[in-house]
Every structure is written in structure tokens, then in C-alpha cells.
Amino acid sequence: MIKVAFYDAKPYDKPSFEHYGEAHGMQFRFLETKLNEDTVALSNGCDAVCVFVNDTVNAAVIERLYALGVKLIALRSAGYNNVDVRAAFGKIHVVHVPAYSPYAVAEHAMALLLTSVRRIHKAYNRTRDFNFSLNGLTGFDFHGKTVGVIGTGKIGRIFIDICRGFGMKVIAYDPYPAEGAGIEYVSLDDLFARSDVISLHCPLNDSTFHTVNADAIAKMKKGVVIVNTSRGALIDAEALLDGIKSRKIGAACLDVYEEEADIFFEDRSGHILDDDLLSRLISMPNVIVTSHQAFLTEEALGNIAETTVNNIRSYFDNDGACDNELCYRCGNIERCKNNRKEKCF
Ligand code: NAI
Image 1 (cartoon, rainbow, N blue to C red):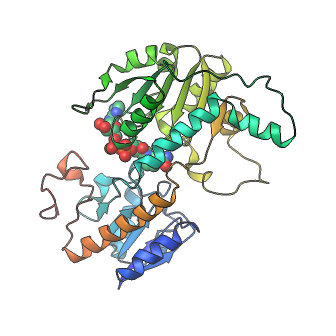
Image 2 (image 1 turned 30 degrees about the vertical axis):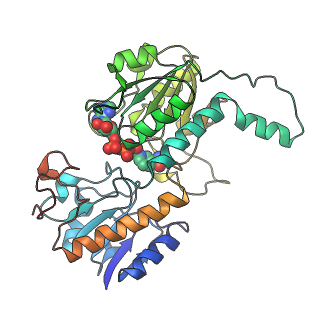
Image 3 (image 1 turned 180 degrees about the horizontal axis):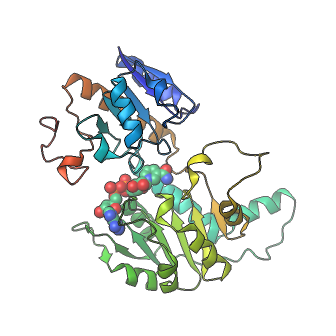
């Protein structure tokens, strides 16, 4: 029986993980707390830990996990910016779920965009109060507008297809352009200058940190709508707020926030929110915030559980080899040079 400490467990995680776990001889220790230096000891006696986007898997945590004999860090997410993959190398293997439903995230990005531009969130509240006035609800047509997509991987390309369905003109920036996808690639500066809507679909790393900062915002069109369903720190939230206050930014749709780790995924109603910046952003009439919800569809939850369980099983059955390993040594962390024929350490 493989024992797995499952951190940051939520009620919606359990059914699918219990279902796939039981079928594969796996026992999950569901822990509501997040993984960090204070909680790492809770994985004592486990073969693996299963973590999500706001668990802290830094060098110190990895050292403790290693000392406890934990062999595998199984991310149940695609993004892995919260794991020090370099520190893990040579000690603990790391696996992730490269794709579970890129449709879920791309569709949520469009849902946020439509809600914001067509003022659906306002209309919903008004009609519940029998207020049928249309004042202040004027939107704009998507047809003919230019959308700039940063990152044309799995999610970005689906978002592009959705936008094309609306008759939008698509331009994109990606240091690794998708061959043959018929996408017009431009420089980041060009994208900032030409886009009516900008949607972020790249990973968070050193080169993408604060992609949207004060300089970038200065280059954008007045009234630009910014959508972020990727990672919060792609946007400098202070600069975003300044851009909204100065009326440069027409609207912001945020499923992620730079400092979300201690706030999102929990019910904070009835509490005083300490984060003034987030409070101020939420108070803006042209900002919509969802709390890292883009992945949350039935299809995605099922795929996440199935792939995570398969990753763990594959690791322990194949002497450490697993298709979805994140390997620091191989340079391109997601594409192991060994082609998963053997393990890297
Ligand atoms: P992917 O790996 O298929 O695509 C990422 C793309 O970004 C690649 O084409 C890559 O070349 C590009 N890229 C790398 N560096 C870049 C840079 N400096 N500038 C512009 N593009 C760059 O990843 P996928 O599945 O499309 O996911 C994208 C991101 O979405 C993830 O990294 C994750 O942060 C986020 N995400 C958010 C979820 C949510 O619930 N809000 C759920 C799943 C993913």
C-alpha cells in the first residue's frame, strides 16, 4: 500500500482521489493544512506527498521531506513554480499533471472576459433587486477587436480558438512559437501597443515575473482589458491598481493574485481582509476576481486525480521512471532528455 500525504485537501478533491486511489492500492492521508516548514512533519511515514499550487515546497521543506524518507512530490497541478525543482534534484523526484483540462481554464478566461465586458455581474445583481435599468451596462463588441495572447501553449491556443469564434483578431507572444498554428506572433511591445484585450497564458518563472508592470501598462491602449488565469505574479498588482485608478486599464479579470497563497480557496467572509491591495482591487467596479477557480470542472478534477494516481503508481512500479517527471538536470524541466526511459538520479 502506497501512503500519500495529501496537503491542502478540499471536499471537492476527495471523491475523485479516493475513487482512483482505492483502485490503485493507494492510501491518502487527507490534510486540510498546506505544506510548509511547520506542517511537513505530518507526512511522516508516507511514501509520497501530493501538493497543490499554494503549498510551499522550498529547499527547507524538501530537506525535511528527504529526511523523513518521502520519495516523491506529486503535484496535482500543471504549474510548479511553488516547488524548488533544483533543490529537489538528487533527493526527491517531482511529478506533475501537464494537462487535465486546458478547456476548463481557457473557457473560464472567456467567461471572465464576457462577464466583465458585458457587465453580467452587475446586471445579475440588479435584476435580483428588480432594478431593470440599463444605465452603466454598455459593453463593446468582441467582433473585430484585437486580443493579445501571451503564451500559446495548450491553454493559450484553446483560448485563441475561442476568440476566433467571436471574430476577434489574434496576435500572440511566445518565445517558442507554435509551428503551423496560423498564429501571428509579434514582440511583447507590439502586443501591448495593439491589443484591446490581453490574456496571460504563460508559466510563472524568472523571465515572466511581472510581465505586466508599470512600463508595460504605459505601452498599452487606453481602455485595455487584462485577463489573468495563469499565475498572480505575472502581474505587478500595485501597477495594475495604478493603471485602473488612472483609467488607463478599462477592466481586469483575475483568477489569480500575486499574494493569493494565504487567502484564496478559503471562506474569509466575516473576517477583516488584511491585504489592502486585494481589497482595493475587489472594490473597483471594473475588476472581477475569482479565487483560482479556472481549473474547477468535473472533467478536470477527474483527470487530475487519474493522472496523479497514475504518476505515483508509475513511479513506484517502474523504479522511479515516470513520464510526467519534472527534472532539473535536463535543462528543459518538462522535457527530460532521457525520454523517461530511465530515471535521472
Ligand atoms: P503550456 O506549457 O502548454 O504553455 C505555456 C506556454 O507559455 C508555452 O507555449 C511556453 O513556450 C510559453 N512561454 C514560456 N515562457 C514564456 C514567456 N517568457 N513569455 C510568453 N510565453 C512563454 O502550459 P498551459 O497548460 O497552457 O498552462 C499555462 C499556465 O496556466 C500554467 O503555467 C499555469 O500557470 C496556468 N494554469 C492556471 C490554472 C488555473 O486554475 N487558474 C490551471 C492550470 C494552469
